[in-house]
Image (tube, rainbow, N blue to C red; front, side, top):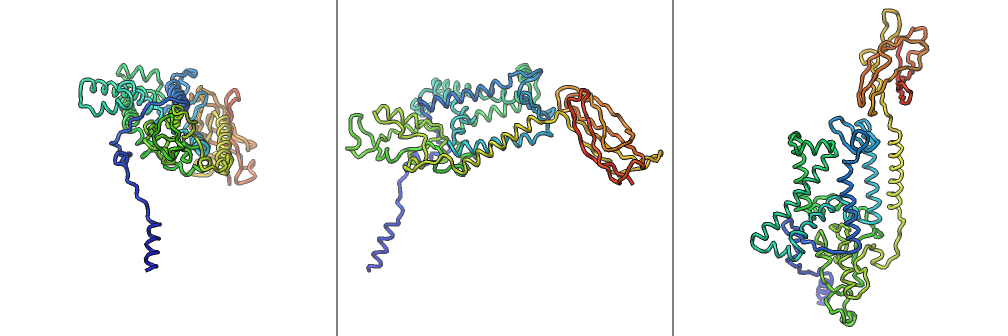
Length: 473
């Protein structure tokens, strides 16, 4: 009997407590359940807006910056060359793009390990454009409560014009965004002129409409769905987080127990913490989470809930910081560590890759030379009794001006050059020059002689060499 009683008591202790979920919040990630974001003001909201404006204006202005006879940043897919101010990247230099992506990855890892998802909350294009679209909602449909009420009302003239104005504004912003994006690949002055005069190709119109609809759908309709369900960054952020990573956190030791109260009452006498359970932190969250439930991968570290909570704390006469940028160690009253192996490792790799990238960019050769041997035979003996090797010199002018080049070879004491020794190449031109070298057998001491081809511009400012071999009997 005692054994059965002990077993029952043990089962009660290990029994999992069941919490009855609120039906209104149980299915908050259903795409059909719309999140109505409440407007908020504060330090972090102001910072996010200013950074968003900087990011957006930078995106809009860059295609209009002139650089010589072209725009400063232009990714010319037709001519297969990418212009980034004074730097021209050709397909042969795409390793630089891989290096740049690696730098961006390590930079993202470093910032995330130290400051959490600040990229998502402050400068991610999805976040920037989402808040722009929300701003139009607030101006045309009203505050959060008015928008909720408007959606619940039957269709009327007032509802139709407000909805129509909002979606029209969204579409105008989307079209402007997509056109700006296309102008990174087609010169902006030509693109806008041909678009509005209806002289552009059907393919360009297709991509303008495609990216406009993508912007309209992502920032207008999908919003938090992109951050929660589609963006992979939300999923692998946990790999970079540790207990010393700065996150948006709720101080439960200070805030619990929650509950409403008057401003004049003493919460300690009522057994309450500083949280008045106003739910404003939930209402201002663009992903609809309750930060009081702890760290969640849906949080984009935008700081909106911090501003909302600080405003409430000021109104109640309490100290700010109930919700703040903090770390798990700080929330648990454990000493924080700024320097840790993972953070240092990411920082060192970011620094090294940046130096390598800068060095590679500063040493991009303005010309490229490839030496291709005749694959049909290693050598042949011509009618004059000379040993002859055939080569194809493939010269690539990677500059933006024409150049006159001279070709030479080193490693042979006495030889005959059969073929052109001077060529002129237009900007970006690739020229294959077939030539032959003939040498008297008496001059050859070995069956294989190392040689070096040299191609230089007429002013000797550009010079490139390539090693090869001369075969004989």
